[in-house]
Image (cartoon, rainbow, N blue to C red; front, side, top):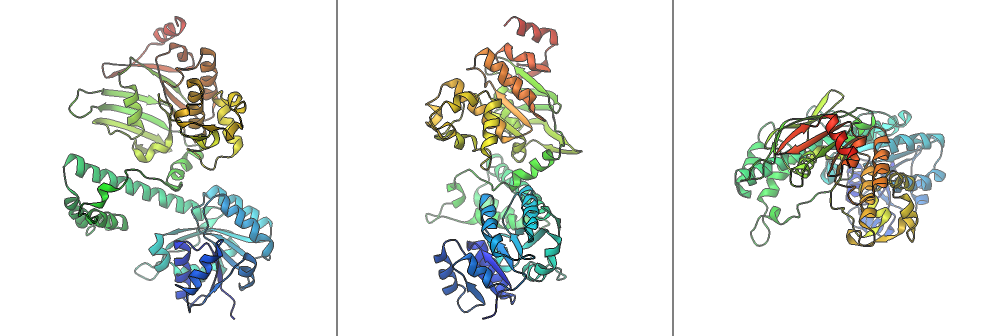
Amino acid sequence: MKKADIGLIGLAVMGENLVMNMESKGFTVAVFNRTTEKVDKFVNGRAAGKNIIGCHSLEELVDNLEKPRKVFMMVKAGQAVDDMIEQLLPLLDNGDILIDGGNSHFPDTIRRTAYVESKGKLYIGTGVSGGEEGALKGPSMMPGGSPAAWESVKPIFQAICAKVEDGSPCCDWVGENGAGHFVKMVHNGIEYGDMQLICEAYQLMRDLLGMNDDEMHEVFAAWNKTELDSYLIEITRDILAYKDTDGQPIVEKILDTAGQKGTGKWTGIAALDEGVPLTLSLQGLEFAYQGRAPVLKQLDLQVQPHEMIAIVGPSGSGKTTLFRLLLGLLHPTGGSAVLTGGGEALDVSPSTRCCFAYVPQDNVIFSGTVAETLRLVRPDAPEEALWAALRAACAEDFVRGLPGGLDCPLRERGGSLSEGQNQRLAIARAILADAPILLLDEVTSALDLETEQRVLENIAALPGKTCILSTHRPSVLSLCSRVYRLHNAALELLPESEWRRLYRNN
């Protein structure tokens, strides 16, 4: 039997569709899945009678490939990719090619390319865009990594990818190292922004204009016939028209929450990782809850990178509301809030939320281990990063003293810990998130003065960190460069002599 032109590992929907796409373009494909029952089901079902070779081990997969061997990995991003690389390397010859088609973070691809090349093999990290349908009918592909690998995979990639009107393939070599996955990351980041725009348009139509789902469907249908014609507008149109079995719009029954695989967040963080400092500017910012008097009026504030500033004021003065505006949880009723860095300016919105790490007044601690609680913000954070965040929050000692340490189970809302310990865990989690701006909302109220001072000194010493804190405790003001008072919906800068007097009299 003829050996396969390429092998693919991971027969989820994307993997299966890519295999069917490659086979339809005249290529023979060998396939493997960790759960071998999936291999048999695929080969004997959807792939029956086609030039697809089912394999029940990695050794069998490699043996069925033409040289130089090309192995396309469609496995979950993260540790699974590293594990698969380690299993495949001993089976491959020098010059063979490993391809990662998942949404890997580009620094991981840079690391993996260097590692695989050090073993005499070649590596490609390729973005694959278009979802399940694109994988089957023609995705956009963004390969990068080992330049020497490109000529071997080019015929396959450019055959299966989408084509523009003149027949040009939506696939070409992007660059070395992690370039392919970097481009895919930015691609996804733009897409997240598009989805946010669609969500905001939907909210305006529903809540402000009072439109029903059928009316919104008609608007999106009209938009899809204009320059807004796109896949995202198209599926929004169709979703708004879809009815459940009881005749009610299905969109109203879907849980109002969303998740992400990381690429949208990484897009924002990438600029930050390049050392581009962020300036936060409020200009005439106003907010009022519907039918109520303004909570915030004409707020003007500019926070420079690496500053620590404090906002004081009585309970109910609007400090928490201001934080919610910065997080994109509320929309200003006037003025603007803008993040500026590297010459680019972004209006503060849900899409910029990754630039902030927020610790609310009521510490949100869920059931699970200490490590799981911390990793809610960074699922792939190594253990040393957890301890570093705990150390900065003055929580290392008490966590090491817990039964099992990081593996100690916590009750819902941290019921097994003191309020001060819960506060420090919440602060550690925010530090671990590694966002450039920390928002701390009365988060040291349960700490003694000495611990509070140490925690804030540690935060102030974190490289590249900007901190905005609200407080009722004058003791925290000694570390701040500026102090503002929020009173009667307005923000005023306190003279240094006044807030230092508050600190001394504490």
